[in-house]
Length: 245
Image (cartoon, rainbow, N blue to C red; front, side, top):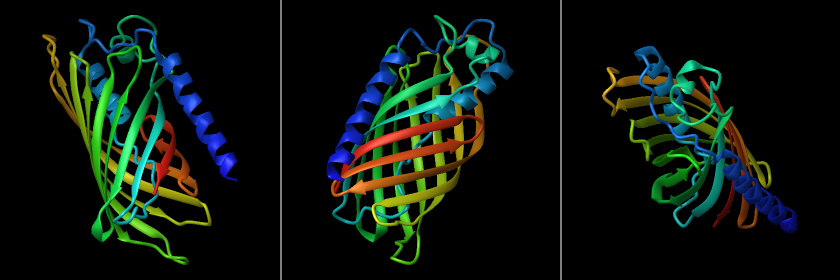
């Protein structure tokens, strides 16, 4: 089983690298001079969801001595046929997915609290982001009862000169372990702020979106694999390979 888990993690690492290469190719975000307010509104919402925090973790706390570090990839299915993406991608036709390889670290603290941070960048583009989370396991869970947690998060877009974007998130999640497998689910709200940094007559955008996420973590000894799907105005699919203790 340990060898199988290691093989899965190696395969996920290869997938992350492959997706990174496939994502490359001049997909920079640069606002066209013909973009109007409605298009900027729609673009801001999708960008906000793309950069929003992806927990990729069950509700249960890591514990006071717990530590987790992993690599991830998130594929966000954007509205690639829309005019607002065509006016925002500078050099070529918008891709169906924007793929973000990430590094993600989490640390357990007393009283069922976990903190986490992540950084992501899309190779071949000007898109990168960073974020942080604070999670509290309200119910720690047991052999018969699930764990329940609430989480606050923050993310910010970096590297895009034409656009500043940031998000605040608040969600509640539930998880229940069954041997090495822990399925989880959660529901939350994302508040998005986008600021136009060009000379275009576009007002800043403040909006929000509701997200449902479903996932599962498989852990054998120190090795783990997590899969998660997020459903909102756009869909996002994430995979993580991690080491935790």
